[in-house]
Picture 1 (tube, one colour):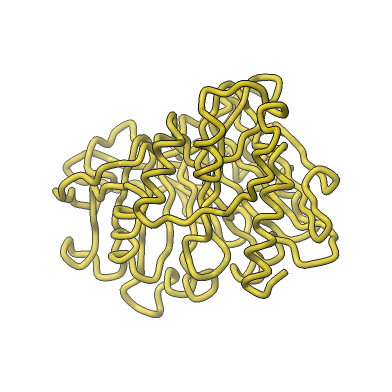
Picture 2: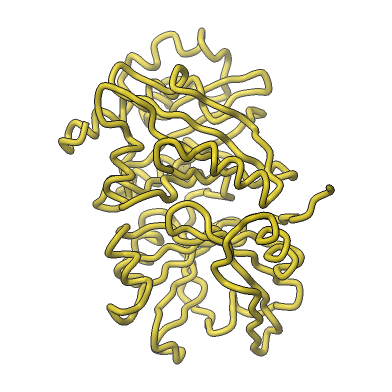
Amino acid sequence: MGDFCPIQGFDHLELYVGNARQAALFYAKGLGFTQTAYRGLKTGDRKVASYVMEQGQIRLVLSTALSREHPISRSVLQHGDAISTIALRVPDAVRAYRETTARGAVGAIPPTEEEDAGGILRYAAIRIYGNTQIKFIDRRDYTGVFAPGFEATHLPPTPDVGLQDIDHIVGNVERGTMDRWAQFFAETLGFELLAHFDDKIVSTAYSALMSKVMVDGTGRIKLPVNEPASGKRTSQIEEYLTYNGGAGVQHVAFATDNIVKTVSQLQASGIEFLGVPPSYYRDLEARVGNLDVAIEKLAKLGILVDRDRDGYLFQIFTQPVVDRPTLFFEVIERHGSRGFGEGNFKALFESIEREQALRGNL
């Protein structure tokens, strides 16, 4: 069939939040993002305030409603601060919308054009799991500030922490729906199954999950989908679904080329990570082979390591960045490996379960 919905890359992620101004400060001071654009009352928007935050090739949009009746307010009430939109850059937003809806996707925003002095921005959106949407962004005739209605901000740049790009975005869905969503991404967007992890691979004595990793034709857009599996206690996926009020984006993995430096800076700015027991690092070199970072440094920071046939990777996971145990971030550095840290699943699950126990949710 050919690539009926070509994707050029991630354009941005939009988060609906309770207070975008305060969230922008957190993402700047805590995670090293620089505010580059704004819309709100000062630009003439009477409904929504949004802050565009950038670092490397990553762009986040933090949006809050200016009235309680707005859909963003209802979203925040249900989900808390959460990722509402995965925006993908495409050569033709109208075609992307037409092709995906013809294959079964439900439209969220019909093809739309907005224009200002920077040109014409075209976009459309479809619905995916929970209240999340995929938005198609066509920038071929637009050179302005992010989007019409936004104005550039001229704040001093925030010293970044080395986050370069979005590696993958993980969604949590209800039990029994993972296969349906994997099929949805395959049929409507032309994605393929990159990896499948069952509850024999991703489990502890108490809980388990299953996951399918879907990827586009370029290999750049990776969207794993998790569902809970049967276990003796409440799994991290079930905890997420309860506090998120349904399915949604669980975490975003940001790529770096120097994870030791990145994590050191993040910790210094107050970002908290999941703890790893010292026993994880015993015989680590025997398990994963020679590394270009001393194991002592990895142990000090709590960085995990995994190796597959293509190479190895470093990864670490933050604590939830909101009060609900929902959204968190991953920092990942790849050295050839195309995997997702399968060898770390047990250690990661046990670490999350320790946090669940502290919250009284295991």
